Length: 386
Image 1: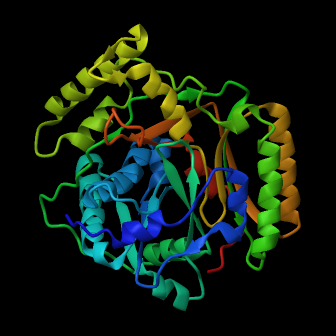
Image 2: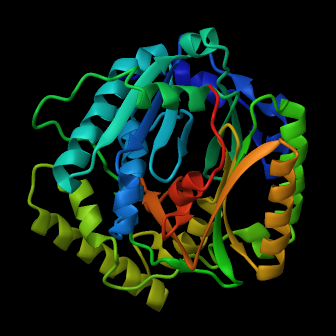
């Protein structure tokens, strides 16, 4: 652990945006310093995992990458982004060693707990720029307690490609290393579509598409999505559904058992989730914890859309709007502006990082429940030139 605040103060100085549409504009992004590091991760065999009905596990491992970083840096602020079957982040040079150790620990844990391979990598921002790409970050304030980072400039995508090619590898964690995944959970029920279909959408600029042209196209997409109920937010206004026992209790046990037994960790997860379920049902407030208020804030804090060198969204979409969206994306593709992938499913799901139920800084990553962003990425046509 470290107590360095220089990186956190730089990131905290970046202004937050409250209008998501503004984030399509490159002028609201701030370049990261040359000596920062970009971390990337990607689950090997996610296609097979989806086929075997393990996409919730895939999401859990991806979120674990972020959870381990949050805990490694003592809760200090830094930019990160969840991608369904992987995650990315950036940290200052002083945090690099801790970040690499946390990343390697999650790789070891994913293999031991779930027999799931995880690629990991870290690359210096100056090396990204030397390759002709940029790493720029913006902050989107979703509620009083939470903001999410957006990435632009192509640098994160380039770093991921380097990682997949075998470069930028992080040293292996020693046997027996356990990541600190305090707060990682997945207790909420799946989120069924209320209006038609849960759409996982990924839109990327074609090689040669200028930032201004992509920004204009993204604005058209967001304008269309704005017509959806709640702008397409998959979580109901009063929060997600909850049932007991939760479907993610076993996964949470794997995340939080440390050196203890799975059975004991699962018992604890079931007990905690039962108490929360009972409080939501009854409306009782115990020890300052108002479960119904917490449930409402979950929806406000949920991350269902993001800019990550392109635009990603998980939308609850009615049939008419879906038809218009597909038509607009086809138009952009035929014009050579964008490449896109869409995957339709009946439900969305959430994976959460909750440092404390008594604070409002809990984050909730939304993805489609049947392949989501991973399936959408596989549907993208055409080569990527990096």
